Amino acid sequence: MGMGILDEVLVCEEFSWGDPGFGTAAYSNGLTVGPVITGGTEDQKAEYLGRLVKEPLIASYCVTEPGAGSDVASIQTTAVRDGDHYILNGQKMWITGAGQADWFFVLAYTDKSAGYKGMSAFIVESSWDGVSLGKKETNMGQRASDTRAVIFEDVHVPVENLIGGVEGAGWFNAMKAFDLSRPCVAAQAVGCSRAAYEYALQYADERKTFGKKLHEHQAIQFMLADMKTKIEASRLLTWRTAWEVDNGIKNTESAAHAKRFAADSCMEITTDAVQVFGGYGYSEEYPVARLMRAAKVLQIYEGSSQVQRMIIGREMVRSL
Image (tube, rainbow, N blue to C red; front, side):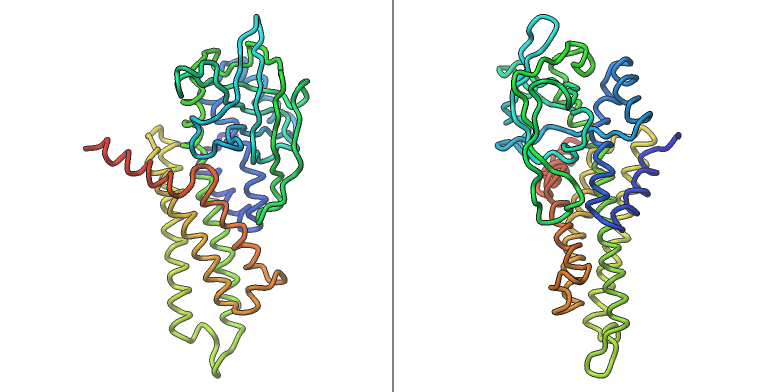
């Protein structure tokens, strides 16, 4: 279709405006296909990306483990070469879309002694022997997104499914994917923030206190003004980093800026929206409570807000 990352973030914002969980479910393919697009062989692209185009299928990104989240180097999953296959063993956790995935991007150690340079990436089909799923997790928010553990027990992965055909490139494939996907997470945050702001603004026009509409009170005006400013700033940061991807410009730092600021702003905006609603905002019968619950995970997955600050600091120092 000729669409770029900027087009993708525009769509993702609208999905997440309607429901942040749907936004996550819809965008998860983008994270998973990133390493195949940037590092896969032509045969891998034709086979596995082709499936997602020809049929209504999704793929899932398997990196996080019970003991390894932001610290990716702490993963325990291993892949041992055995003739024309690798024997894959390990457990992944909090995998978005796992229950519906046709195939997984899996990060595993092929050489533990080499540290992160000993990580390799594989395409693993969900139907293969030894692949099993955990129960669907009951999350605090974004419940439209199917989240599960994925267990690999002596899974025979053909050598042809080693992404790029080269051992040791897994870390770089996985990290590069984040530069492509973080603009979309930021867009999710913008969509969720925008929905919360619009609900709050509408309620502030309908509700009266002390003989005036809520939005006629300066304290509420200031809250709404700050919400709107954060949304506009988040969107511009998001569009900038997406534009950089589409134009071949390294966007590691700008993606971290956008993801960190938009996610943190979303948590603040949705919390303030609940405050504008008062007691009604605390009720599940009103949408702002759902949006506040949905916002929290945006500060956690795809690299926490603290990790984004670390990335920004690292890139700043490199520029000296």
